[in-house]
Image (cartoon, rainbow, N blue to C red; front, top):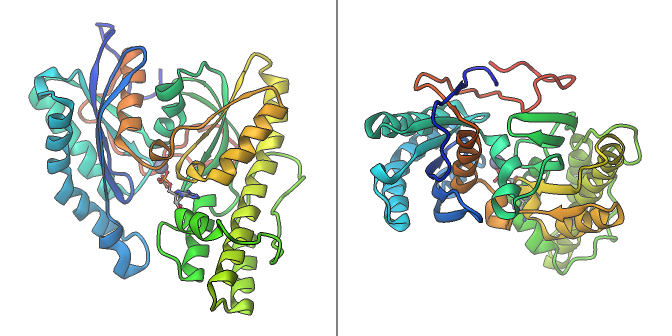
Length: 363
Ligand code: KG4
Ligand code: ZN
């Protein structure tokens, strides 16, 4: 049992859980019901893109205030859509880290308030664990599985051995894959979030017109690096000065392909290690916002197929940040009897595998 957890006396076998996600720039609330299969009874996401657009990036203080503005309304709307009152809930789960501290405080304080007032269990969810477990919400995938977790702030390859049990094979040495998409989009004059914008622009582009490097390709280990690629992309865009839509499309296609190639190469190394170390492991899972990318999904499906693994990726709306994944992680933890006390802290840094080399200890 991890630190700060306690084992509830009663094992709960059927539950309705409210999930609250406020770790970055989406305010998201969902209600998920346990069962086979589980049911997403409501799943609402309020993007803060408009609030952050004038600043060219996510401003933590603006994000915290926007969460505060949107959260109560979204909680009410999610309960109405689910057809439930607070009394019908079995627990309230909120992302307690990693992420921006202001937003984490807003979400967890709301969840704790409801849990206290309605006398329900509270679960402090690790946002990364929620991404990691989403495949079990949609497909009841058995542990252990290999996970490529790629989002705006994280790029990791992990073995998911059980709820609360993760082993990191590799991580980014510098930037995350999502960040490479977002920064590239900005340089190309495309809107944020950059991933979907690059994907759309790349659709009719020629990915071979502009050669770009494939960082760490073929190298030992399973780590990623995107900062060199980001510099190469910037230099390529400055040298090209893309004024016509065809050049933008070709650059977007080259960027998408380079990032996908890098992710697939590192994942292939992880698959080899996973097959050797976990011969009974049967699945490769992709999660996090970048896993919504269709080109990446196709490539990972082919890799899994060639390696004798099943490939599972949540539908795009459950890859990007959402409340259903938080509610589901709450269900997974409460099913094991784990709940958290109402004084559980938020954790802006919260690695899934604290023993991984180079991991900064949580604050
Ligand atoms: O998981 P997520 O919603 O938030 C974080 O926890 O960071 O991931 C957001 C990231 C952004 O960088 C966004 O550009 C990227 O996921 N993303 C995509 C796509 N959809 C979202 N990247 C590539 N292709 C997409 N279709
Ligand atoms: Zn995320």
